[in-house]
Length: 142
Image (cartoon, rainbow, N blue to C red; front, side, top):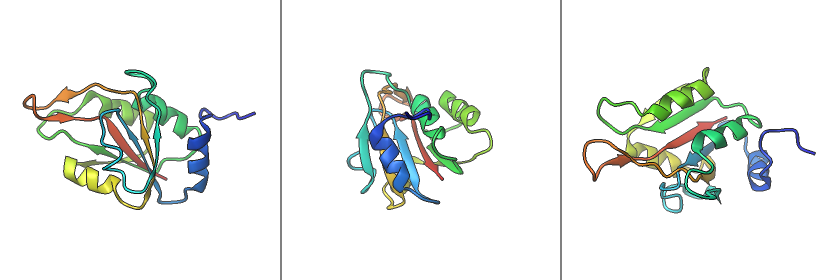
């Protein structure tokens, strides 16, 4: 019987194959996982809208691995998304790097991203107009 906070067999198998410096993408359900996560193993966890959330998946993964670094996609402008403070609370001693959309997509497409997880999170947050939105994603490294 597993005693970790993560019991998903595919996630556990993928994590067991990862090593120092490998990365894991945890994305909302709107993230273009197929086209923006390279050759990473893709797992679609979205059960229904909002289930599970990115922070819930992060919490489960944290029970299995030690996170060394995290990268987030910034919306641009001066507004800091509320979810960033939630990420910082979950990973208080982790270095966070903020990347713009293009840099984040490029980082998520690298060969070091071994696992890409799509969640049920669907909330769009407008930045400056209805055409500019950001997603809730987190790229973690261990």
